[in-house]
Image 1 (cartoon, rainbow, N blue to C red):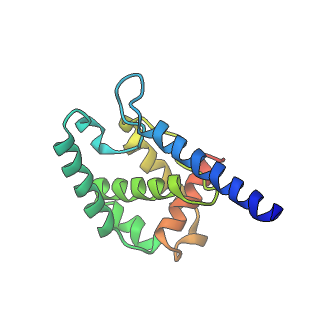
Image 2 (cartoon, rainbow, N blue to C red):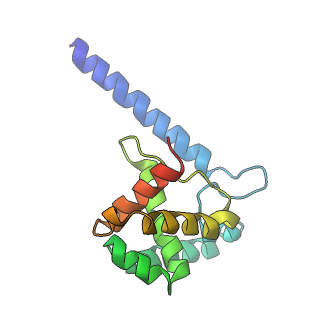
Length: 147
């Protein structure tokens, strides 16, 4: 019974911690900017515009190749959709059950520079070129913003 109670307590604490972290990230910062890294932050004042932007972000992110080598080549001609895929990987990592590093930048004006730094890291690591895009982006994030 002690193991069961400890597991239940740990699960509850973990769930509450994740919920608190997500609530903090969703709260506007002092300058009214959303803390999720996204090109959609400019639409925070109009929920319908924000929703349309988020839907287009998700659709664009799905177009990105799933193999790192192809992703890097594709990003050269699809910068915004490339950024969107990186944002979606970061969001997934924010809510993962296991410990995962996330992008250190939260100011949406830094999105382009942040994506470029991740792409540069990927290009410098040919050993992951044949890996899955999302896992490679996650590795780049962990290297650039260690947790």
